[in-house]
Each structure stands twice: as structure tokens, then as C-alpha cells.
Amino acid sequence: MPELDPTFTVLPLAALADAALSRARDLGAAHADLRVVRTKTLHRVLRDAKLEGSSDASELGLSVRVIHQGSWGFAAGVALSTEEAARLADQAVAMARVAQPLVPAAVDLAAEPVHAEQTWVSAYDVNPFDVPEGERHGRLLELSQRLLAADGVQHATARLLAVQENTFYADTAGTSTTQQRVRIAPELEALHVGDTGFFAMNTVAPPAGRGWEYLTGTGWDFDAEVAQLPDWLVEHARAPSVEAGRYDLVVEPSNLWLTIHESVAHGTELDRALGYEAAYAGTSFATFDRLGSLHYGSEHMHVTGDRVTEHGLSTVGFDDEGVAAQSFDIISAGVLVGYQLNRQMAAEKGLGRSNGCAYADSAGHIPLQRMPNVSLTPDPEGPDVAGLIAGVERGLYVVGNNSWSIDMQRYNFQFTAQRFFAIQDGELAGQVKDAAYQATTTDFWGSMDAVGGPSTYLLAGTFSCGKGQPGQGAPVSHGAPAARFRDVNVLNTRSGGEV
Image (cartoon, rainbow, N blue to C red; front, side, top):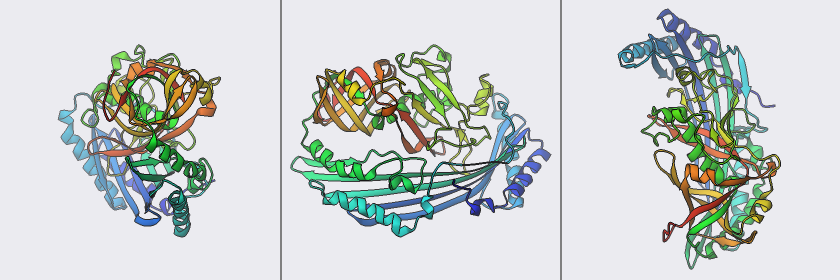
């Protein structure tokens, strides 16, 4: 069982909290919280089995956030002293006083039980930062060399990104939490150079809230995928260009997670729906007045948000407002029934307790409403992938994410993939290339007529989802089964051909 890093817990966390929160109370703050955040990042890149890039970074700081006279105030610094913590409380209150005349309504926070002296550590076996450098390099080198030795592969790139995030939170209500998250993102890319051009293909292994064991057999078989990747790549290079038109799609979760992320998860962030978040990637068509009535998709569509899924990139014990992790419904039988919340928006809209979606990517940034793990629920009795394909007369089987585009309302979109396979009369008939599927959010999810069973489920995601100004990145996972969609418009990305 992993334990908290003692080099973080040895910091004077309780003393910093006492200094900041006592000073905030003395200045009349109705609420105050302190966060101490340390983020360690490891990045390695091998190009053609030779080290091309290597970096190790660590960021450490503290921040104080207050509500004073109905307005937020925030200040951040890097000196871990009680004097600095008290000074930041002074500065945060001063900022709140400056902002107060501009606040349209007094800030209130939804109630949350006190969580005193709580600790939480994510689920992993071996911390990547504890692995000897020779072992890390050796594993990436081994996988790179296997790709380079395969027919049809002229170049190979191996990438490894790992993060250890430690957070201490305390507030004037009495909550204090200490947490540690470890996550890892390995990726292999093969490049084929042929008569018809350059073609690249990546592994579809998702980033995960796991440790070094993820690269050595637990959770994903990298050896098997690397062995198959060259054949898929060469077949892709030789594949015919897709004929634009209407197709039934069977979409693997290795592709569908990104469609969920862009069209569902971003679309159900309440700050976007309310228009509070607009400059960075827009607002949302799923406005608050449509809660409980908007038909987001078909009756087969059940979407949840959570911060509790094991190995999820958004999984925590407590969010950055001291709210305990939980699971909640977003879409039920195709209907919008919930949003992602922080404590302020939950109180403002009378929605009860926050569902724990506040996060800041460093001590230097204020917590925003950020997405949890947002996932499509599998059908307990649903078919396997072969069963989904068997129900398609003319279609495409879609694997792995690639490029994408979506409008500023999270409504009109198009997505490509690592691999598209033609489906003819219920059977796979080889790859095609230059394809993208295009739809509106409600049309696409409304066309979903079958959801795969638990055996088709995969938890995928991204290390960095962008939001806010100044911009912040947040890790997030999206689980999904394979699913089938009827009569979807498919474009040829070389010639267009929208139908």
C-alpha cells in the first residue's frame, strides 16, 4: 500500500495553516483556506532508440483564499514560513476588499461536513520516481528497438511522462487533508515512410493513475501492442481512402473517450452552462434552464461524474475546497440531470452539496470548477465488440483518438482516429484512411442504439485538459464501453465530401 511521501509531510503544514487561517479570522474573513502544493514531473523522450529529451522538475508553493465581505480574495507565494502564510492572508483580504464593489452578489458556499486530519493516497504499486534511471531508460529503449526492428517502421519515438502531486488543504471550518496522486503516461509512436507518403501511428494505451507497474504488465500489455503496431501501420499506409457518406459506426473507448470529453464533459461544466467560463473554449449549449429536460442522447446513454474510480486521473480523496470525493449522475436515459459543481455554484443555484469538482493545478492558481472522471456506463448485459459489429451492414470500426474539432458551444464537431476499419455485412473488411466522423452532439448521442458490455469497457483520458485565464491544466479520465451509432456522416479529410 503506497504511503505519503515523507519529504512532503515533514513540511510545517499545520503551522502554516494555523498562521494563515488565524490571521484571516482576525481580519474578519467569513471563510479562509490554505493550500500547500508540490508537483514533481518527470519527462523522457527517445527518438530512434536514442535519448532526445530528459527533464525533471519540482514546483512547490502555498496559497490563501478568503471570502471577505462577500467577495473572494486570493494570494500565493513560495516561502514556506508562518510569516509568509500570515502575509498571504493579509494580501488575500486586501484583494477581496478591492474586488468587493464589483461583485454582483455575495459569495456563499454550499455546506460540507468537516473532514479533520484526513490522508489519502492514490492506487499504485511502484512510484515511478523511485525507479532507477537505468530501469526507466531500459524499458523505453527495449520497446523502441522492437518497433525499429519491425518491417515497415523507419522511425520510432518513445515518450514517458510521470507526475507526483502532493496537496495539503486546511480551512477555517476545521477540515484538513493531505493527499498524494501518482500518474503515468507512456506512449510509443511508429513512423512508416513509403511511396505514398509518411504515416504515423501511436499506441492507444491511455494515461493512468498508476505507477511504474503500468509499463511492466499491470493494467496494459505494452509488449503486445508494440508487436501489433507495425502491421496496423503498414496496413493503414496501403489502405484505400474512405468514400464520404453515411455510415454506422462501432466506436472503441480508445476513441470514444475524447468525444465524451469534448461534447459531454465540457458541455456539462456548470460554469460554461452559466456563461461564467467563455473565453477559453467557449460556453455550452446545455444551458441551466434545460436541466431535467434536454435530451442529450438516446435512452442507452447513462453518464456519471466521479472522483472515486480506481486509477482515474481525476480521482482524489477530497477536492481543492475540502469536499469529499463522490459519484453523481450527469445524464440518465439520455436526459441531462446534473452538472459538475464547486461549492459556490452549488449554493448559488440551490443544488445542495457540491459534488467535489474544484481543482487548481498549482498553489499559484485559484481553484476552478474542473471536470471529474466523466464516463459512459456500459450495459451490464450488452454485447462484446464482435456483437456490435455483427449488427452493422455498412459501417466503420473506430479505434484510437487522433485530431478533433468542436465549436464554442460544444455542439458541432468532427473527430478522426488512429485506425478506421471498414465493416461489411457484420464483418471487418480491412482499414480505410482519411476518415472523420461529423455530427452535432445531440444527433450523435441520439443515434447510439447499442452500448457494449463490461468486457468492452476502458478507462482512458488525458494528462492535461485546459481551462481558465490564466490557463490551467487538469488530468481527467473518461471511461466508456464500445458503442454503436447509426447513420453518422463521415467525411473524407482529403477531399471533404460532406453528405
